[in-house]
Image (cartoon, rainbow over all chains, first blue to last red; front, top):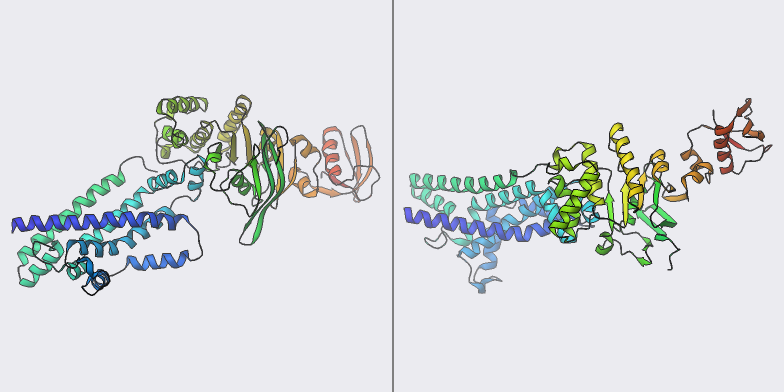
Length: 215
Length: 299
Protein backbone atom coordinates (compact mmCIF):
# COMPACT_ATOMS: atom_id res chain seq x y z
CA UNK A 1 0.00 0.00 0.00
CA UNK A 2 2.78 2.46 0.94
CA UNK A 3 4.49 2.53 -2.50
CA UNK A 4 1.05 2.72 -4.12
CA UNK A 5 0.11 5.53 -1.76
CA UNK A 6 3.18 7.55 -2.73
CA UNK A 7 2.48 6.94 -6.42
CA UNK A 8 -1.20 7.92 -6.09
CA UNK A 9 -0.34 11.00 -4.04
CA UNK A 10 2.31 12.16 -6.50
CA UNK A 11 -0.03 11.66 -9.45
CA UNK A 12 -2.78 13.61 -7.63
CA UNK A 13 -0.33 16.42 -7.02
CA UNK A 14 0.98 16.37 -10.59
CA UNK A 15 -2.46 16.33 -12.24
CA UNK A 16 -3.93 18.99 -9.92
CA UNK A 17 -0.81 21.15 -10.08
CA UNK A 18 -0.66 21.02 -13.87
CA UNK A 19 -4.39 21.75 -14.17
CA UNK A 20 -4.12 24.70 -11.77
CA UNK A 21 -1.13 26.10 -13.65
CA UNK A 22 -2.81 25.80 -17.06
CA UNK A 23 -6.06 27.29 -15.73
CA UNK A 24 -4.07 30.24 -14.37
CA UNK A 25 -2.29 30.74 -17.70
CA UNK A 26 -5.68 30.82 -19.44
CA UNK A 27 -7.87 32.37 -16.74
CA UNK A 28 -5.69 35.19 -15.44
CA UNK A 29 -5.33 37.07 -18.77
CA UNK A 30 -8.99 36.52 -19.68
CA UNK A 31 -10.14 37.59 -16.20
CA UNK A 32 -7.91 40.67 -16.34
CA UNK A 33 -9.22 41.62 -19.75
CA UNK A 34 -12.81 41.20 -18.58
CA UNK A 35 -12.13 43.25 -15.45
CA UNK A 36 -10.54 46.17 -17.29
CA UNK A 37 -12.54 46.34 -20.52
CA UNK A 38 -16.04 47.69 -20.95
CA UNK A 39 -17.99 46.31 -23.89
CA UNK A 40 -21.60 45.72 -24.75
CA UNK A 41 -21.91 41.98 -24.05
CA UNK A 42 -19.69 42.06 -20.92
CA UNK A 43 -22.55 41.17 -18.57
CA UNK A 44 -23.48 38.19 -20.71
CA UNK A 45 -19.88 36.95 -20.76
CA UNK A 46 -19.59 37.40 -16.98
CA UNK A 47 -22.83 35.46 -16.48
CA UNK A 48 -21.43 32.59 -18.57
CA UNK A 49 -18.19 32.66 -16.52
CA UNK A 50 -20.09 32.69 -13.23
CA UNK A 51 -22.21 29.77 -14.40
CA UNK A 52 -18.98 27.97 -15.31
CA UNK A 53 -17.77 28.45 -11.74
CA UNK A 54 -20.61 26.18 -10.65
CA UNK A 55 -19.99 23.62 -13.40
CA UNK A 56 -20.42 20.12 -11.89
CA UNK A 57 -17.12 18.21 -12.39
CA UNK A 58 -19.01 15.21 -13.72
CA UNK A 59 -20.53 17.37 -16.48
CA UNK A 60 -17.08 18.72 -17.36
CA UNK A 61 -15.87 15.10 -17.43
CA UNK A 62 -18.74 14.16 -19.72
CA UNK A 63 -17.93 16.92 -22.24
CA UNK A 64 -14.24 16.04 -22.30
CA UNK A 65 -15.04 12.32 -22.56
CA UNK A 66 -17.24 12.98 -25.59
CA UNK A 67 -14.40 14.95 -27.21
CA UNK A 68 -11.65 12.45 -26.37
CA UNK A 69 -13.61 9.28 -27.03
CA UNK A 70 -12.26 7.25 -29.93
CA UNK A 71 -15.03 8.55 -32.20
CA UNK A 72 -14.81 12.09 -30.79
CA UNK A 73 -13.32 15.16 -32.46
CA UNK A 74 -10.07 14.77 -30.49
CA UNK A 75 -10.21 10.96 -30.39
CA UNK A 76 -7.16 10.70 -32.63
CA UNK A 77 -4.96 12.12 -29.88
CA UNK A 78 -5.39 8.93 -27.86
CA UNK A 79 -5.68 10.84 -24.60
CA UNK A 80 -8.69 9.05 -23.14
CA UNK A 81 -7.88 7.30 -19.83
CA UNK A 82 -4.57 9.09 -19.45
CA UNK A 83 -3.42 11.71 -16.91
CA UNK A 84 -3.46 14.17 -19.83
CA UNK A 85 -7.22 13.73 -20.19
CA UNK A 86 -7.63 14.28 -16.45
CA UNK A 87 -5.63 17.53 -16.67
CA UNK A 88 -7.80 18.75 -19.57
CA UNK A 89 -11.02 18.00 -17.67
CA UNK A 90 -9.74 19.70 -14.54
CA UNK A 91 -8.61 22.75 -16.52
CA UNK A 92 -12.22 23.04 -17.75
CA UNK A 93 -13.37 22.95 -14.11
CA UNK A 94 -10.78 25.38 -12.71
CA UNK A 95 -10.54 28.00 -15.48
CA UNK A 96 -13.97 29.62 -14.89
CA UNK A 97 -13.10 29.82 -11.17
CA UNK A 98 -9.84 31.63 -11.95
CA UNK A 99 -11.56 33.98 -14.44
CA UNK A 100 -14.46 34.76 -12.10
CA UNK A 101 -12.31 35.41 -9.04
CA UNK A 102 -9.80 37.47 -11.08
CA UNK A 103 -12.63 39.70 -12.33
CA UNK A 104 -13.95 40.03 -8.76
CA UNK A 105 -10.49 40.65 -7.28
CA UNK A 106 -9.49 43.35 -9.79
CA UNK A 107 -12.99 44.80 -9.54
CA UNK A 108 -12.34 45.57 -5.87
CA UNK A 109 -9.50 47.94 -6.72
CA UNK A 110 -10.10 51.67 -7.06
CA UNK A 111 -10.90 52.13 -10.77
CA UNK A 112 -8.65 55.21 -10.81
CA UNK A 113 -5.63 53.07 -9.86
CA UNK A 114 -5.26 51.93 -13.48
CA UNK A 115 -5.31 55.58 -14.61
CA UNK A 116 -2.85 56.53 -11.87
CA UNK A 117 -0.42 53.82 -12.99
CA UNK A 118 -0.73 54.93 -16.60
CA UNK A 119 -0.31 58.53 -15.47
CA UNK A 120 2.96 57.49 -13.83
CA UNK A 121 4.12 56.23 -17.21
CA UNK A 122 3.44 52.51 -16.80
CA UNK A 123 3.23 50.50 -20.03
CA UNK A 124 0.24 48.20 -20.53
CA UNK A 125 2.24 45.24 -19.18
CA UNK A 126 3.54 47.20 -16.17
CA UNK A 127 0.01 48.42 -15.40
CA UNK A 128 -1.40 44.87 -15.40
CA UNK A 129 1.49 43.58 -13.28
CA UNK A 130 0.93 46.26 -10.62
CA UNK A 131 -2.83 45.73 -10.65
CA UNK A 132 -2.20 42.01 -10.04
CA UNK A 133 0.19 42.93 -7.28
CA UNK A 134 -2.39 45.21 -5.66
CA UNK A 135 -5.05 42.49 -5.96
CA UNK A 136 -2.72 39.70 -4.82
CA UNK A 137 -4.92 38.70 -1.87
CA UNK A 138 -8.00 37.85 -3.97
CA UNK A 139 -5.80 36.49 -6.79
CA UNK A 140 -4.07 34.05 -4.45
CA UNK A 141 -7.54 33.14 -3.17
CA UNK A 142 -8.37 32.33 -6.80
CA UNK A 143 -5.31 30.04 -6.99
CA UNK A 144 -6.38 28.30 -3.77
CA UNK A 145 -9.96 27.92 -4.98
CA UNK A 146 -8.80 26.52 -8.33
CA UNK A 147 -6.39 24.04 -6.71
CA UNK A 148 -8.99 23.08 -4.11
CA UNK A 149 -11.60 22.39 -6.75
CA UNK A 150 -9.36 20.10 -8.83
CA UNK A 151 -7.58 18.17 -6.07
CA UNK A 152 -10.92 17.30 -4.46
CA UNK A 153 -12.99 16.43 -7.53
CA UNK A 154 -13.70 12.83 -8.40
CA UNK A 155 -16.35 12.80 -11.14
CA UNK A 156 -14.25 14.06 -14.05
CA UNK A 157 -11.12 12.18 -12.95
CA UNK A 158 -13.10 8.95 -12.86
CA UNK A 159 -14.85 9.58 -16.18
CA UNK A 160 -11.85 10.52 -18.35
CA UNK A 161 -9.11 8.80 -16.28
CA UNK A 162 -10.87 5.55 -15.58
CA UNK A 163 -9.13 4.98 -12.18
CA UNK A 164 -6.58 2.63 -13.77
CA UNK A 165 -4.03 1.35 -11.24
CA UNK A 166 -0.50 2.77 -11.74
CA UNK A 167 -1.77 4.95 -14.60
CA UNK A 168 -4.64 7.24 -13.71
CA UNK A 169 -5.50 6.41 -10.11
CA UNK A 170 -5.48 9.51 -7.91
CA UNK A 171 -6.41 10.02 -4.27
CA UNK A 172 -10.09 10.78 -4.84
CA UNK A 173 -10.74 7.90 -7.24
CA UNK A 174 -8.76 5.55 -4.94
CA UNK A 175 -10.98 6.59 -2.00
CA UNK A 176 -14.09 5.74 -4.05
CA UNK A 177 -12.59 2.37 -4.99
CA UNK A 178 -11.52 1.45 -1.44
CA UNK A 179 -14.90 2.50 -0.04
CA UNK A 180 -16.64 0.36 -2.67
CA UNK A 181 -14.52 -2.61 -1.63
CA UNK A 182 -15.43 -2.07 2.02
CA UNK A 183 -11.79 -1.18 2.84
CA UNK A 184 -12.76 1.76 5.01
CA UNK A 185 -9.39 1.88 6.81
CA UNK A 186 -7.53 2.41 3.50
CA UNK A 187 -10.13 4.92 2.37
CA UNK A 188 -9.72 6.92 5.60
CA UNK A 189 -5.91 6.93 5.27
CA UNK A 190 -6.22 8.19 1.68
CA UNK A 191 -8.71 10.80 2.91
CA UNK A 192 -6.22 12.07 5.52
CA UNK A 193 -3.43 12.20 2.94
CA UNK A 194 -5.67 14.21 0.61
CA UNK A 195 -6.57 16.66 3.38
CA UNK A 196 -2.94 16.96 4.49
CA UNK A 197 -1.91 17.71 0.90
CA UNK A 198 -4.61 20.36 0.55
CA UNK A 199 -3.61 21.84 3.90
CA UNK A 200 0.10 22.08 3.01
CA UNK A 201 -0.54 23.64 -0.41
CA UNK A 202 -3.08 26.11 0.95
CA UNK A 203 -0.82 26.86 3.91
CA UNK A 204 2.00 27.88 1.56
CA UNK A 205 -0.37 29.97 -0.57
CA UNK A 206 -1.89 31.63 2.52
CA UNK A 207 1.60 32.49 3.77
CA UNK A 208 2.38 34.04 0.37
CA UNK A 209 -0.93 35.87 0.45
CA UNK A 210 -0.53 37.39 3.89
CA UNK A 211 3.13 38.42 3.89
CA UNK A 212 4.34 41.87 2.90
CA UNK A 213 2.79 45.28 3.58
CA UNK A 214 -0.98 45.30 3.79
CA UNK A 215 -3.14 48.04 2.39
CA UNK B 1 -0.68 73.28 -36.60
CA UNK B 2 1.87 75.91 -35.59
CA UNK B 3 1.76 76.55 -31.87
CA UNK B 4 1.66 80.11 -30.59
CA UNK B 5 5.01 81.30 -29.22
CA UNK B 6 5.48 80.13 -25.64
CA UNK B 7 2.59 77.66 -25.87
CA UNK B 8 3.25 74.14 -24.63
CA UNK B 9 -0.21 72.59 -24.96
CA UNK B 10 -2.98 73.56 -27.33
CA UNK B 11 -6.43 72.06 -27.04
CA UNK B 12 -8.68 72.44 -30.06
CA UNK B 13 -12.34 71.58 -30.53
CA UNK B 14 -12.30 68.90 -27.80
CA UNK B 15 -15.59 67.07 -27.24
CA UNK B 16 -16.20 64.25 -24.75
CA UNK B 17 -19.60 62.59 -24.43
CA UNK B 18 -20.78 60.02 -21.89
CA UNK B 19 -24.04 58.10 -22.22
CA UNK B 20 -25.10 60.44 -25.02
CA UNK B 21 -24.50 63.56 -22.92
CA UNK B 22 -21.84 66.06 -23.90
CA UNK B 23 -19.81 66.51 -20.72
CA UNK B 24 -16.89 68.47 -22.14
CA UNK B 25 -16.69 70.89 -25.04
CA UNK B 26 -13.53 72.97 -25.19
CA UNK B 27 -13.19 75.04 -28.34
CA UNK B 28 -9.75 76.36 -27.52
CA UNK B 29 -7.33 76.28 -24.61
CA UNK B 30 -3.66 77.21 -24.64
CA UNK B 31 -1.30 76.45 -21.82
CA UNK B 32 1.94 78.38 -21.83
CA UNK B 33 5.27 76.82 -20.95
CA UNK B 34 6.07 77.25 -17.27
CA UNK B 35 2.69 78.64 -16.25
CA UNK B 36 0.36 77.24 -13.63
CA UNK B 37 -3.12 77.17 -15.08
CA UNK B 38 -5.84 76.74 -12.49
CA UNK B 39 -9.11 75.31 -13.73
CA UNK B 40 -12.04 76.15 -11.50
CA UNK B 41 -15.62 75.02 -11.71
CA UNK B 42 -18.35 73.45 -9.63
CA UNK B 43 -18.66 69.67 -9.16
CA UNK B 44 -19.63 67.96 -12.41
CA UNK B 45 -18.36 70.81 -14.59
CA UNK B 46 -15.96 68.48 -16.43
CA UNK B 47 -12.71 69.52 -14.72
CA UNK B 48 -11.40 66.01 -14.06
CA UNK B 49 -12.47 64.89 -17.54
CA UNK B 50 -10.46 67.75 -19.06
CA UNK B 51 -7.45 66.78 -16.92
CA UNK B 52 -7.66 63.13 -18.00
CA UNK B 53 -7.87 64.26 -21.62
CA UNK B 54 -4.79 66.45 -21.09
CA UNK B 55 -3.05 63.40 -19.59
CA UNK B 56 -3.79 61.46 -22.77
CA UNK B 57 -5.76 58.92 -20.73
CA UNK B 58 -9.13 59.56 -22.25
CA UNK B 59 -10.30 59.08 -25.80
CA UNK B 60 -12.31 62.17 -26.80
CA UNK B 61 -15.12 61.96 -29.33
CA UNK B 62 -13.57 64.81 -31.28
CA UNK B 63 -10.76 67.29 -31.18
CA UNK B 64 -7.07 67.33 -30.55
CA UNK B 65 -4.48 67.98 -27.90
CA UNK B 66 -1.23 69.20 -29.38
CA UNK B 67 1.93 69.32 -27.29
CA UNK B 68 4.85 71.21 -28.81
CA UNK B 69 3.24 70.90 -32.21
CA UNK B 70 2.75 67.10 -31.98
CA UNK B 71 -0.75 65.67 -31.53
CA UNK B 72 -1.22 63.34 -28.53
CA UNK B 73 -2.64 59.93 -29.44
CA UNK B 74 -5.30 59.37 -26.75
CA UNK B 75 -4.97 56.34 -24.46
CA UNK B 76 -1.98 54.94 -26.38
CA UNK B 77 0.75 57.51 -26.25
CA UNK B 78 3.21 56.03 -23.75
CA UNK B 79 5.94 58.47 -24.77
CA UNK B 80 3.65 61.41 -23.96
CA UNK B 81 2.45 59.84 -20.70
CA UNK B 82 6.09 59.60 -19.66
CA UNK B 83 6.41 63.37 -20.04
CA UNK B 84 3.62 64.15 -17.58
CA UNK B 85 3.00 63.80 -13.85
CA UNK B 86 -0.50 63.13 -12.56
CA UNK B 87 -1.85 63.57 -9.04
CA UNK B 88 -5.39 62.54 -8.12
CA UNK B 89 -7.52 63.82 -5.20
CA UNK B 90 -6.95 60.51 -3.38
CA UNK B 91 -3.27 59.54 -3.09
CA UNK B 92 -3.87 56.07 -4.68
CA UNK B 93 -0.63 54.74 -3.28
CA UNK B 94 0.64 51.27 -4.10
CA UNK B 95 0.93 48.60 -1.39
CA UNK B 96 4.60 49.16 -0.87
CA UNK B 97 6.84 51.53 1.08
CA UNK B 98 6.94 55.30 0.65
CA UNK B 99 10.24 54.87 -1.21
CA UNK B 100 8.71 52.20 -3.46
CA UNK B 101 5.81 54.49 -4.30
CA UNK B 102 7.95 57.49 -5.14
CA UNK B 103 10.32 55.28 -7.16
CA UNK B 104 7.51 53.58 -9.14
CA UNK B 105 7.41 55.98 -12.10
CA UNK B 106 11.20 55.98 -12.43
CA UNK B 107 11.24 52.18 -12.44
CA UNK B 108 8.56 52.17 -15.15
CA UNK B 109 10.97 54.28 -17.21
CA UNK B 110 13.86 51.91 -16.56
CA UNK B 111 15.91 54.48 -14.63
CA UNK B 112 18.91 52.83 -12.93
CA UNK B 113 18.77 52.06 -9.20
CA UNK B 114 21.50 54.54 -8.17
CA UNK B 115 19.85 57.43 -9.99
CA UNK B 116 16.42 56.35 -8.72
CA UNK B 117 17.68 56.35 -5.12
CA UNK B 118 19.23 59.78 -5.52
CA UNK B 119 16.17 61.38 -7.11
CA UNK B 120 13.72 59.77 -4.69
CA UNK B 121 15.76 60.81 -1.64
CA UNK B 122 15.90 64.37 -2.99
CA UNK B 123 12.11 64.65 -3.25
CA UNK B 124 11.45 62.85 0.02
CA UNK B 125 13.61 65.51 1.67
CA UNK B 126 12.00 68.40 -0.18
CA UNK B 127 8.55 67.27 0.82
CA UNK B 128 9.65 66.54 4.41
CA UNK B 129 8.81 62.84 4.32
CA UNK B 130 12.32 61.42 4.28
CA UNK B 131 11.79 59.99 7.78
CA UNK B 132 8.90 57.93 6.35
CA UNK B 133 11.09 56.41 3.63
CA UNK B 134 10.60 52.75 4.61
CA UNK B 135 7.11 53.02 6.07
CA UNK B 136 4.35 51.05 4.31
CA UNK B 137 1.98 53.37 2.46
CA UNK B 138 -0.94 51.90 4.43
CA UNK B 139 0.45 53.41 7.64
CA UNK B 140 0.57 57.02 6.45
CA UNK B 141 -1.72 59.86 7.51
CA UNK B 142 -3.72 61.54 4.75
CA UNK B 143 -1.28 64.47 4.62
CA UNK B 144 1.75 62.19 4.47
CA UNK B 145 0.08 60.09 1.79
CA UNK B 146 -0.68 63.13 -0.35
CA UNK B 147 2.90 64.40 0.05
CA UNK B 148 4.07 60.97 -1.12
CA UNK B 149 1.73 61.23 -4.08
CA UNK B 150 3.12 64.69 -4.95
CA UNK B 151 6.71 63.44 -4.57
CA UNK B 152 5.88 60.48 -6.83
CA UNK B 153 4.82 62.88 -9.58
CA UNK B 154 7.53 65.51 -9.03
CA UNK B 155 10.39 62.98 -8.98
CA UNK B 156 9.62 62.29 -12.64
CA UNK B 157 10.63 65.86 -13.49
CA UNK B 158 7.53 66.08 -15.68
CA UNK B 159 7.18 68.53 -18.50
CA UNK B 160 3.56 69.01 -17.40
CA UNK B 161 2.26 68.36 -13.89
CA UNK B 162 -1.47 67.66 -13.82
CA UNK B 163 -3.09 68.02 -10.41
CA UNK B 164 -6.69 67.01 -9.80
CA UNK B 165 -7.82 68.61 -6.54
CA UNK B 166 -4.67 67.48 -4.72
CA UNK B 167 -5.66 69.16 -1.45
CA UNK B 168 -9.32 68.20 -1.30
CA UNK B 169 -9.04 65.17 1.00
CA UNK B 170 -6.90 66.91 3.62
CA UNK B 171 -7.82 68.48 6.94
CA UNK B 172 -7.54 72.27 7.06
CA UNK B 173 -4.18 72.41 8.91
CA UNK B 174 -2.49 69.91 6.57
CA UNK B 175 -4.09 71.60 3.60
CA UNK B 176 -2.71 75.00 4.61
CA UNK B 177 0.76 73.52 5.11
CA UNK B 178 0.72 71.68 1.80
CA UNK B 179 -0.53 74.79 0.00
CA UNK B 180 2.44 76.70 1.42
CA UNK B 181 4.79 73.92 0.25
CA UNK B 182 3.18 73.86 -3.16
CA UNK B 183 3.47 77.63 -3.53
CA UNK B 184 7.16 77.40 -2.63
CA UNK B 185 7.69 74.60 -5.15
CA UNK B 186 5.89 76.60 -7.81
CA UNK B 187 8.55 79.27 -7.55
CA UNK B 188 11.49 76.90 -7.13
CA UNK B 189 10.58 74.33 -9.81
CA UNK B 190 9.31 76.04 -12.95
CA UNK B 191 7.26 73.18 -14.43
CA UNK B 192 4.10 73.75 -16.42
CA UNK B 193 1.21 72.89 -14.12
CA UNK B 194 -2.51 72.42 -14.56
CA UNK B 195 -4.36 72.54 -11.26
CA UNK B 196 -7.99 71.52 -11.07
CA UNK B 197 -9.86 72.75 -8.03
CA UNK B 198 -13.26 73.95 -6.96
CA UNK B 199 -11.70 76.30 -4.41
CA UNK B 200 -11.30 79.72 -5.97
CA UNK B 201 -8.85 80.92 -3.33
CA UNK B 202 -6.48 78.01 -4.17
CA UNK B 203 -6.73 78.86 -7.86
CA UNK B 204 -6.06 82.56 -7.31
CA UNK B 205 -3.18 81.85 -4.94
CA UNK B 206 -1.45 79.23 -7.06
CA UNK B 207 -2.47 80.03 -10.63
CA UNK B 208 -0.78 82.28 -13.17
CA UNK B 209 -3.84 81.71 -15.32
CA UNK B 210 -7.41 80.95 -14.32
CA UNK B 211 -9.87 79.05 -16.49
CA UNK B 212 -13.51 78.95 -15.47
CA UNK B 213 -15.19 75.72 -16.52
CA UNK B 214 -18.98 75.62 -16.38
CA UNK B 215 -21.18 72.87 -17.84
CA UNK B 216 -18.22 71.41 -19.73
CA UNK B 217 -17.27 74.69 -21.40
CA UNK B 218 -14.46 77.09 -20.67
CA UNK B 219 -16.28 80.35 -20.19
CA UNK B 220 -13.27 82.49 -19.42
CA UNK B 221 -9.52 82.02 -19.35
CA UNK B 222 -7.30 84.88 -18.25
CA UNK B 223 -5.15 85.99 -15.34
CA UNK B 224 -6.85 85.45 -11.98
CA UNK B 225 -6.91 89.22 -11.40
CA UNK B 226 -8.69 89.91 -14.68
CA UNK B 227 -11.18 87.08 -14.22
CA UNK B 228 -11.96 88.29 -10.71
CA UNK B 229 -12.20 91.92 -11.77
CA UNK B 230 -14.04 91.41 -15.02
CA UNK B 231 -16.07 88.21 -15.17
CA UNK B 232 -17.21 87.66 -18.71
CA UNK B 233 -20.82 86.83 -17.92
CA UNK B 234 -23.28 86.48 -15.07
CA UNK B 235 -22.47 82.77 -14.44
CA UNK B 236 -18.75 83.46 -14.11
CA UNK B 237 -19.53 86.47 -11.92
CA UNK B 238 -21.65 84.26 -9.70
CA UNK B 239 -18.83 81.72 -9.42
CA UNK B 240 -16.09 84.22 -8.64
CA UNK B 241 -18.12 86.49 -6.40
CA UNK B 242 -19.30 85.77 -2.93
CA UNK B 243 -21.72 88.68 -2.72
CA UNK B 244 -25.40 88.33 -3.42
CA UNK B 245 -26.29 89.88 -6.76
CA UNK B 246 -28.88 92.59 -6.67
CA UNK B 247 -30.47 94.22 -9.67
CA UNK B 248 -30.25 97.97 -9.47
CA UNK B 249 -29.91 101.33 -11.03
CA UNK B 250 -26.48 102.96 -10.90
CA UNK B 251 -26.95 106.52 -9.70
CA UNK B 252 -23.33 107.60 -9.44
CA UNK B 253 -19.77 106.35 -9.75
CA UNK B 254 -17.06 108.75 -8.72
CA UNK B 255 -13.71 108.54 -6.91
CA UNK B 256 -14.22 104.89 -5.97
CA UNK B 257 -17.66 105.64 -4.60
CA UNK B 258 -20.66 103.94 -6.10
CA UNK B 259 -24.30 104.64 -5.39
CA UNK B 260 -26.82 102.05 -6.53
CA UNK B 261 -30.57 102.42 -6.36
CA UNK B 262 -32.00 98.91 -5.96
CA UNK B 263 -35.58 100.05 -5.94
CA UNK B 264 -35.74 99.29 -2.25
CA UNK B 265 -33.45 102.16 -1.39
CA UNK B 266 -29.97 103.43 -2.24
CA UNK B 267 -26.74 101.55 -1.50
CA UNK B 268 -23.40 103.17 -1.19
CA UNK B 269 -20.01 101.49 -1.34
CA UNK B 270 -16.48 102.81 -1.11
CA UNK B 271 -13.00 101.98 -2.48
CA UNK B 272 -12.23 98.19 -2.42
CA UNK B 273 -15.81 97.05 -2.25
CA UNK B 274 -16.78 99.46 -4.99
CA UNK B 275 -14.02 98.08 -7.21
CA UNK B 276 -15.38 94.57 -6.85
CA UNK B 277 -18.85 95.92 -7.46
CA UNK B 278 -17.78 97.63 -10.65
CA UNK B 279 -16.15 94.38 -11.75
CA UNK B 280 -19.50 92.66 -11.50
CA UNK B 281 -21.18 95.45 -13.37
CA UNK B 282 -18.61 95.37 -16.14
CA UNK B 283 -19.29 91.70 -16.41
CA UNK B 284 -22.81 92.48 -17.42
CA UNK B 285 -21.85 95.53 -19.43
CA UNK B 286 -23.52 97.91 -17.05
CA UNK B 287 -20.72 100.06 -15.73
CA UNK B 288 -22.05 103.42 -16.67
CA UNK B 289 -23.99 105.52 -14.18
CA UNK B 290 -27.68 106.07 -14.87
CA UNK B 291 -28.04 102.76 -16.60
CA UNK B 292 -31.41 101.62 -15.39
CA UNK B 293 -30.95 97.91 -16.07
CA UNK B 294 -27.60 97.57 -14.29
CA UNK B 295 -26.56 94.80 -11.98
CA UNK B 296 -24.81 95.52 -8.75
CA UNK B 297 -23.44 93.26 -6.11
CA UNK B 298 -23.40 93.38 -2.34
CA UNK B 299 -26.13 93.03 0.21
